[in-house]
Amino acid sequence: MSFSPTEPSRRQKWVAGTLVVVYALVTILPLVWIIATGFKSPSDAIAYPPKVVFEPTLEGYVNLFTTRTRVSEEDFAALPPPSSWYEQIVRDSGLVIAGPSRYGARFANSLIIGFGSTFLCMILGTAAAYAFSRFRVPIKDDLLFFILSTRMMPPIAVAIPIFLMFKNLGLNDTHAGMILLYTAVNLSLSVWLLKGFIDEIPVEYEEAALIDGYTRFQAFYKVVLPQAATGIASTAIFCLIFAWNEYAFAVLLTSGTAQTAPPFIPTILGVGGQDWPAIAAGATLFLLPVMVFTILLRKHLLRGITFGAVRK
Amino acid sequence: MSASPLDQVAAATPVQMATKIKGLSDRAIAWIFVTPTILILLAINIFPLIWTIRLSFTDFRVNRPNAEVSWVGLRNYERVLTDPDIWTAMQATAHFLIWTIVLQVLIGFTLAYLINKKFRGNDLWTTIIVLPMMLSPAVVGNFWTFLYQPQIGLFNYAVSFFTGIDPSSFSMIGDVNLAPWSIVIVDTWMWSPFVMLICLAGLRSIPDSIYEAAECDRASKWRQFWTITIPMVLPFLMLAVLFRGIENFKMFDLVVQLTGGGPGSLTELSSINLKREAFEKWRTGYASAYAVILFVTVFGLASIYVKALNRVKNR
Image (cartoon, rainbow over all chains, first blue to last red; front, side, top):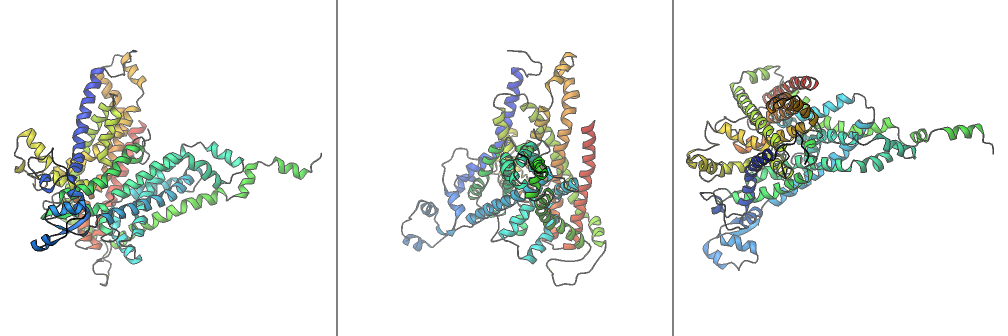
């Protein structure tokens, strides 16, 4: 083995590794606790001391997707036997299913608005980024800085006029309004990131295509787009995650038809206060996709969260 | 075979020039590509901002759309700047901002330094540490209120396990002395990995040859750390602080779900205070003036900071 003065010694590695692993285990604990609480019964969830070993139940998930009512004892006894496993779970706690909850609709709203705005943002963002990267656009630096500075505004500061504007245009509490809004919020990120990715593609490829008789537009979508595919995909995931997690605009501008999951999840109530297993179940379903995407994105993570300022 | 002079000229013309005539000109494409983005940003970012500035000079109230609106000049600004509540909110924001940045820089840099020792499996553990940062602050913040519950919360249980303090004797969110720290703790938990990632990029950008040269000069490890590692990572660290500073100045979702500004208005940060003025008290003109002041503050502080950052970079 060759000796290098910069290679950490085996003991240093061991100490550093132990400390980092301990930190990682502590930091992941709240997330593990969310997932575990989703599978607890209400009494297990609020037990003291906190229960690490418990009998898993799907009660939280059933409560998340249903609304339940209490019926009188005679009516309860007269009911036909439960026809499904989830009805059985609800009956066991002395209740009957009254109907579906709004969680499914809220989750679907998050999907529609998240994917809709990401799609729109990628089309506009890729085109703008290509133009900024390849052409001499007048006042380019000012425009780029302007695009970035829109990100510094506190959302609440522009929420008042957006609220008024949407009210006048009939966009309040609609999918179209939220898609448009999130597209605008995410455009700065996508233009900056995509410009960085396109800058890295050698101009010679396009020049070769142009000489071969392609038009500029053909060169753009037959040569540049396939080259930038990885960059576009990772930028899209970032936009999706930001739209997925957004709360301030969602809570101010949506209340019914277009409400997304983040403002809804904390309001899930059970008998006598917040229904923690149901909230945890809702949070688990909502957070898990992001965790998976984060793991997929890990190579581009730094670039995404710093607007391309740090590339690595 | 003899070609006419015209054919010879045509043959000598580069294909590139011919294509320019065939498709749209570069200039046209540039405008077609950029315009939609600029239009959307103008409509949804700049137009509302101008509207906010306009509203800030009026006594308009959203909940009374039919009332007559009159211009009040700078009176809204005067009232915002002399309102003691605003200064309480600013103090809460400053406390939150300073402590989150201090803690995140310390924890983030330490983690990056340790991970840079390249022990086995460091990639896997880095990814795990990064997870909280990517999640929805509102949903996670809401769940932390459960972890902070006095009797049953995991956080209180952990504190009592290590210190022996009765877990039901203190409430992180309800207590006047602890509430400002409860939001600092959760934000630090969420965002230390962000500082860590940027510092890690900084540490990895230092070429080994510099350390090797220092080793030849018999510089101690301690000296190497202060004269090589720290100055080389500093621009990265300052960038991380800039991002965290702007984000935490705007902080809304996490804290609103965690404490809702309470107890009293102790953790009511500027954004939460502003939301209350605008969407609960419906003082639209007043809130607009407040929003403009906040925006100018962030923008001003960020510009000064970026100047300092560039000076460090160019040193």
